Length: 455
Image (tube, rainbow, N blue to C red; front, side, top):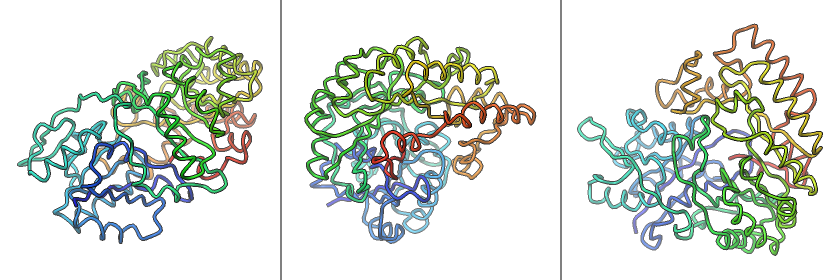
């Protein structure tokens, strides 16, 4: 039997429970698992030493696969890739995920990268495995490699409707190791891609057409985890769960019989299509929060981010949802390039207006985080941001700190001082700037635990 080994690195320290790395379930959906053994080494949950597991499984693997995004996880992935290259140089190290999809050519310059799979890989992986066995990777979309010192490969332009993908092999995971016994919460992905093109988001670069599981399939997935693992709460970790409203409402009708709770993410323009009775249906099906991307109430900043939303729609949402106990959690992004104090004040005034319309409104504040090869990142460069020169630069302490509240390059000393004072006054001292886990601890304390993590 053939074997592949897949590695998933830590995303933070000190977190006990984690979300399933579902990208690997999608990635391996087309493999014949009667003929190919898939070993997932997720160092977040492994009880055995990670290095020992790598030493055990890598030598007889066709490839060693890594999926990573910028930040701490990328650091651990680079360290692991170097270890594999040094100790098992004959085994190709194959990279996928957000980082290399955004910067495939740059990533191929690294000595710890042998092959890149840019974009979705589930239909690519079987061909890649065959190509490695036959010693030819020519013509496989999204696969890049070096030959005689030159980068080879063609872009991945293939489209696969997510609903047509075979059942995901969740059994490749040690599912019980991911479950917090206090919450019995699990993450599920039911969509891929995003119909929107926000200038700060990975999906802008990936340009992947939105597609989704049909409602019956979502019901079966949730029922599988309830019947087999006793899950009680689901985080539908989708970029835009509500992009197809009839589908979302049909899912709600089906989930009513399962007696579970859930939360998910969506977009203002989609949620605004829901009526009071629709929100009531969502509540009856177990929905207790909806996380909605607002980002700002400044029309200038919304245009800068290419959000393409209407503030009237936001008000409509908070009015229609107030007849239920569902909490709308609106995300806000601060410290964007060119943002002014007036932009912040406008956003604060709008938040106060929303809270006046519906006291249950909650706010999640985040600081602008520059990601590779995006419009907002290019704007930030024009205003003083210096981008990392290589993959390791996207994993340094400096980069990791830049994702939190630190003075950005476009903020001079006087402005930074004023900005921090105003931010603390408007969004911290009043308690409006609490993060998601704090929100959850207030809204549903029995569900707040380490499994309520973005990992």
